[in-house]
Image 1 (cartoon, rainbow, N blue to C red):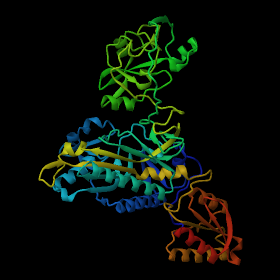
Image 2: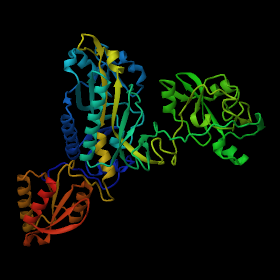
Image 3: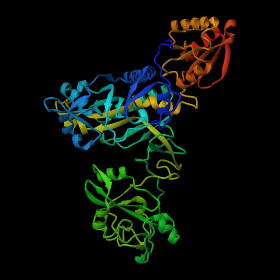
Image 4: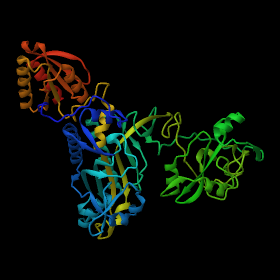
Length: 567
């Protein structure tokens, strides 16, 4: 391809709306353009790379035994009503009406559609197991689209769904997808981790893993062990707990004391000279509209995802000030578990405290010598806190450390959540009707484009891996008025193209500095510069990721390029 006629509108300045490196570079290098908030157009370079990502995803999905189909992105609302997600999904679900006032949604995901397709045509156990997938545009009306392709309202996604006879079959399908995802992200040249995760709005009855690309701008926090391979999203991460020998400890009677205008753990800790771990933090939540008190140690934070899962609630949020006053009889900052008439959800670490200090449910008052189990009931005890750096690993004697990650893939064991709601059943060997066991597997294809740039760039521009670069080689003749340079560039271009290499030839009549800056910004893996030594048949060869320059003959550079691409 000749750059003079190719549409690559590079930018010298960083666009003001671009907050992170991938957004900045994809805009500056002419890969994408914003049409509206969270909605982007892929320009020729961007679309070439996107299609290469899709091709790798498709190859590995096919290799795993999955079969590709293509579903409509327009879905009847009735399907979502049958599964209960029409109301539960929230305002991210884009709804519309046709001219006959029939309601539809723009698909943010396709569980209902795939389940309906399989339900209508598969009736016998002989047709299972089955894995179907598609690569298609999705729509989610994000409240705050940001970070370019990282969190858009319209995006490209690969979603797959498995249908099995039983849970053992689902385990095999899940493992096949886990392995396929690992191969995909490895081929894309990404540094990634598979981590335990929460099922979120998709739901389900079994395990779930997220595939995280490690990057400082990641919106997710990953907790991982310093010794073993344990890793989990902080929403699901748990800490190991050393078994304590039970000893009956005598604790003095509760004692209230005056704490004027002291409402926070930090203020109490400083005033009393006591570590935050000696306090109980009592937070009043609304779980599906009903108040519940969640108790964690003073040096810990509540994990709302864990609270939601333990309570089996659809929605969990902190109570407002009026509700807190009604429940505790005191303003915000003085809540405590003693004497509360609402359910208590007690963290494991709180249940093991011998004595503690907490709010007294009276203004400007706290209470000391509070003993869990004696002074308030331990009816519901569970892990409901966020882990912290240095916590013991739940699987070994190692400790937890934190990383930032970009979620690029998520796999779920759905069980019968959708198949039961939509009537996806089959007849087993005995002619008895059984519900299909399902799995769900998603990859953010367009997000991958940004994730690759986040991991592969420098201060000059993008550094594309060969597998997904829009072109593999960039030929840059320095002076288009020098016939030796032009002839050598054309000769090399023709030979490489004939050999099946994807080449971008910079045939623009621009200053060398402009050409080199654009080449670094675009970031093709191999750059061949043709300059003053062209008369001697010599060129400069450079890999974008190393920046080391070698002077080679035409034949040598041809062989080097083919060798790199084959490897």
